[in-house]
Image (cartoon, rainbow, N blue to C red; front, side, top):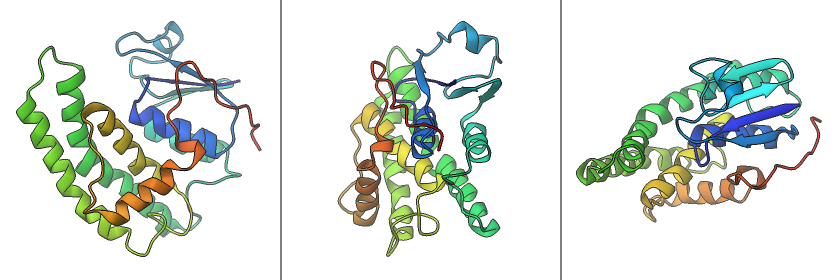
Length: 209
């Protein structure tokens, strides 16, 4: 039995669910609220957050580690390229997403979700900085369907998940001035595997293939 513990609309948990669905691994999604981890997660580690994966006897936490684990454990439908250089590119994209986009997303999340009164000026500045960083991502996607190589990789999964999260927190959508990025996002959003899991909906049991 494979179980994924995640918070609803968490971009990190979203990445893990996309990877599982792309790899056609049957799993059960268990949602929890901030500060209210299930006892079985508590027993794994104080650092076990969203996502945490229970895969048979294995217990894996930290979103980057979960994604790497899934790639090693279920290699039949790979989300990392074979070539070492392209694999490095995927990991560098993830680092760039964290630096350029997740840092600003984090500010918005703290101000809107975890403070009794948000500082709107901080939110507005974070969104402006997030928006400004999109120019480089739009250029990167010129004449490209995917960020690295010719097929979906964890680079695409990582970048994609920041956008639904910021839309939920602050109503932000990719502006029309970033047409290549918007077209890429629309292609990603059209994949059934990228839809946010709903707490009342169990993912399909499609086998481990």
